[in-house]
Length: 143
Image 1 (cartoon, rainbow, N blue to C red):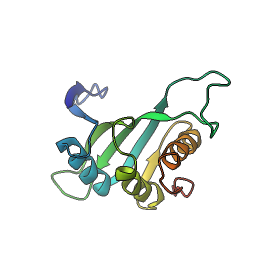
Image 2 (cartoon, rainbow, N blue to C red):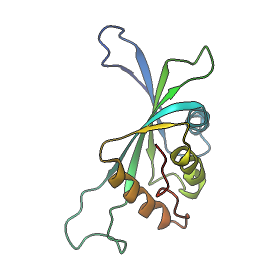
Image 3 (tube, rainbow, N blue to C red):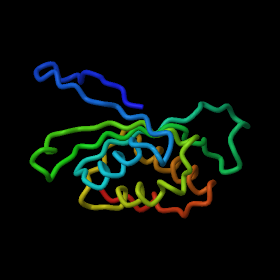
């Protein structure tokens, strides 16, 4: 599923697409894979259901249900200065199928990662992925 939005850049008024990724056999997942392997900058934000004390899973951390990724593509002349946004539904996507792709972005020194309260997002993501049988790895993020 792809949605169209106008960016907040009032001078240029560029439209950009937001891709909802809810399955690994979708065109959106293929586009996500291509975008993450070609991005020089990735903005990341994780979302989870608010929990009350005593409701947390056994790890003590909430389960991330939505991951927002904004990728600035570079390298190719037709893709430079082009951005694309993805919403990953982590409740529907098999987490082992995207763990290595995300880990490679997080540990790459060639990709600038941006986020607000980024460390908290990484801790919660690591907990979410490890609870689904994935190895840890989001603890080695390189800026």
